[in-house]
Length: 186
Ligand SMILES: Cc1cc2nc3c(=O)[nH]c(=O)nc-3n(C[C@H](O)[C@H](O)[C@H](O)COP(=O)(O)O)c2cc1C
Image 1: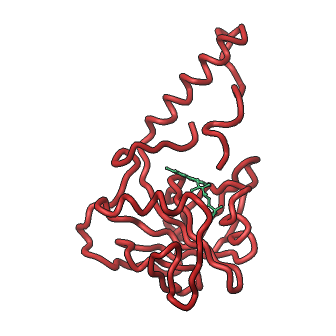
Image 2: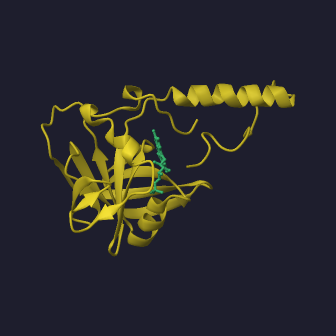
């Protein structure tokens, strides 16, 4: 995983920031501001030929309503990045609040057991696009990539929703970043 917020102080700096110490302080402050942005917390499934993966992700939002597009920001060093670039599909899984422990399981390389149909021990099935959907997910959005934007350390993948559904009660509270002690980016 990339260092939170980059490897060192990152510009640009406002005019009042002059010394190296000012830059470090400003970098930390800007990070704290960025961390106050409210986020959900999800598991993204990816697939290229017979290779499948799943990873924890919070950088996601809907970006258009006709067509139905969502955007996800994916680290270029992630295995998920390789699979989405090759397979051009991904699934977005929402997670029940009570299942918050699941997100820790998908912040490291995933072990796929095709015979058992599990990713790191969690049962999955393939969605319409072929991307894996966790059986435990409250709901899913199954997407085909329409565009991607290279942002340096990350790529913004724009996926059109080609299938969606609930797998648990629609009122199930879904996980948000503030339900955990985790943070990302900043
Ligand atoms: C709370 C949290 C949020 C994360 N959000 C993102 C994200 O939005 N985008 C991303 O690329 N990685 C994110 N990550 C990091 C990935 O989960 C991590 O790099 C993972 O190991 C990548 O898996 P992969 O290499 O198997 O694809 C997040 C990690 C945590 C703990």
